[in-house]
Length: 308
Image 1 (tube, rainbow, N blue to C red):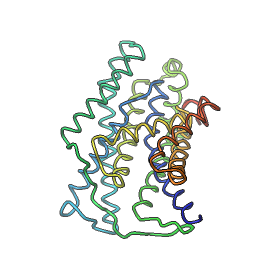
Image 2 (tube, rainbow, N blue to C red):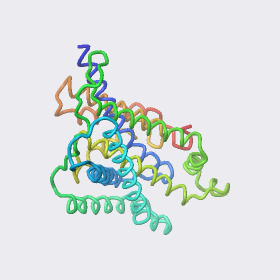
Image 3 (tube, helix red, strand yellow):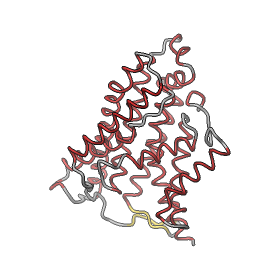
Image 4 (cartoon, one colour):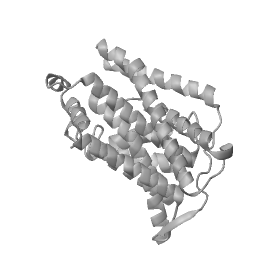
């Protein structure tokens, strides 16, 4: 069992790291608004297409792997373009679907309906513009196994995806816990009125949370598409999984989102292997329900304002 256990663990942690990257967007927005951004999955999807077309635009011949550092450079371009597309989409979402309601003091149900409407708009627009079929991401790495760990084979693409996701997670954790912007985000999450009295621009912090979350989702979307291809429907399942990861770890807690994403990836990987791959989603949500029955606030449970 040594080889499959190690392989399942690596595969689970890789996918879990991507769930964690997306989950951070839910956590940041919830922290400052106490609302769930149900259009976040579509931000993830739009970022994937942004990264895909940017990578294709600079890829010689539009397809095939150039190899070596050139492939790493293409991944960097895809991540940057995906993050930019996600940030722009999230900013547009905040301006169109959230800010007008916030200024009018709308009830929370109005935010939910507005977010769902924005999600459906982006979903159908992407289907019209990008097509209704899966759009494959060019193979950027074709050199097969890069290294072996405990008998498990790890490809170059897996290393790049996992390392990039880990770097983004560490960067966001540092930003929230050790920078002036992070201090402002935590202050608004703790008490927005008190933060305003101390000179914090709440509107600016909310925009920053949306943009940062969108940037993470867009970059994560391109990394996800490298393995699973891009599609106008791709935001739904990963979006739900990332939301599950955020709730599992403790919605509003940055490190909880990371923990929840990694655990969810491992549960899916091992659960699908031990039972049946068709049941991996069922297993993941069953674990979520079981955890919430014991710890209703999630594994870590603290709000963003108290996370650090």
